[in-house]
Amino acid sequence: MTKTPLYDRVTLIGLGLIGSSLGHAMRRAGVAGEIIGADRDEAVCKKAVELGFVDRAETDAAKAVADADLVVLCTPVGTFDALAKEIAGALKPGATLSDVGSVKLSALKAMAAHAPEGVHLIPAHPVAGTENSGPEAGFAELFEGRWTILTPPDGADAAATEKLKSFWEALGSKVEVMEAEHHDLVLAITSHIPHLIAYNIVGTAADLETVTESEVIKYSAGGFRDFTRIAASNPDMWRDIFLANKDAVLEMLGRFSEDLSSLQRAIRWEDGDALHKLFTRTREIRRQVIEAGQDE
Amino acid sequence: MTKTPLYDRVTLIGLGLIGSSLGHAMRRAGVAGEIIGADRDEAVCKKAVELGFVDRAETDAAKAVADADLVVLCTPVGTFDALAKEIAGALKPGATLSDVGSVKLSALKAMAAHAPEGVHLIPAHPVAGTENSGPEAGFAELFEGRWTILTPPDGADAAATEKLKSFWEALGSKVEVMEAEHHDLVLAITSHIPHLIAYNIVGTAADLETVTESEVIKYSAGGFRDFTRIAASNPDMWRDIFLANKDAVLEMLGRFSEDLSSLQRAIRWEDGDALHKLFTRTREIRRQVIEAGQDE
Image 1 (cartoon, rainbow over the protein chains, first blue to last red):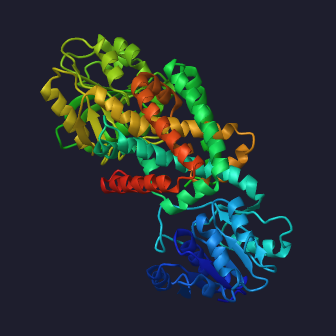
Image 2 (image 1 turned 30 degrees about the vertical axis):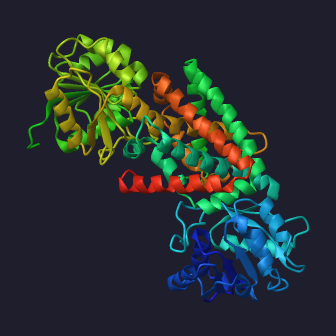
């Protein structure tokens, strides 16, 4: 590596899709002098070393964070409280403690409850992912062209925030800074509700008496299959997201259901114009998503 | 062409995504001696001839069906009644009248009301598509590995049904025969409800006050963008589908909403186990979709 790494030692806690992608992306960008992994599952630790996206891996998270300049929690958000408590005493003064969780207010609170003075707490969320899980699911390009949202708390160290911003940019990501609470609202509608309704419709389809499961699968190319892909995402992670972002999810779900009732009514009363108007507006949003380079 | 074509002359009415794909696929498979196109839009007719998936094209549907052995309606289902009436007198005795509509009971009724004696009425629905529309959106491989459902009415000619089955198989499709009513229930859950909720969430997201449209687009990679793709489908076609399959759609929507309320309650009461149980079951359905070769 000819470049000077941004951080001499980075520890990734949790070596699933995002942890392994981070490892690969860091290797490629040369932003870390050394990459230490931590995962409670020993088989995952072995696999991570074998795949080469960490230099070594530990099942003991506290041991893994020793002397790290950047520690990134890549486990489901429901683990953050216990995990932050476990590693707090082992964090190096001046280190940055971050994460990749999909809910930021609860992540911030959980980490802030334990992070010692002198450790820079800067939560982050790369808005990127696939439906695959585990250390073999990761790839270096996952963050390319995607947005990473940093939600530093009031009074966060500006230099530490700037450095973490450079880190994510080096991995190919675009970076935005916003308040944790606003992040959670934005993600509720752009990610959490889409997952919730995908999980829901796949469940509904599996439970019908009039249509068999095998028919649902055979004829899934009519739209359903796209929902099954989303509904194949990691169950632990998504359970934690819905619990951690309960308020924003329930708020957005209320809006979704209200609109759906109105659509239902338009169908019942055969109001073709109302349907056509909505279907034309949504097409325009798709065009903008493509223009913004956020399509696949 | 060295093979004997299955039909000497095939007329495609409506030259959008499905019509143009049918033309390309028929050319490739050599199943039609001659392909005639019909579209009310003269520019579409010209484009179709230019792209080469029809031998000639007419804006007058009645003129286009003259002497055709197979006529396939590829327009939105809401047009079938008027269209069948328009072409009825011009259909050749012994010809097969079919379609590619996503709703079969209403399609069957609309065509049956006008089809003269001696014309074989065999509705069909290839469960395949993309979010793109128009004569340039078609491609020969669209039907490969996908299912086409035939819904011949009671007393339909067995030989004509068998021939249409061979036709679709020659285009790479797998073929199933079922009752129109059952088809409409199956498609309500595998295609119509997925589209409805995709349209709905994209509409909801665009209407929020707390989250801007530009934020929704920027952070769409978290799941939302997949819904925008589905919600970019042809507005005319989808308006007609929801109106034509009203009863089955409302029934399935009732089930979906009931399940969604239960999921909402699980989040409100923080029942993580209930969430996890559903999220694990849905993953299994995804596995089966992949095994069945119906993923992308």
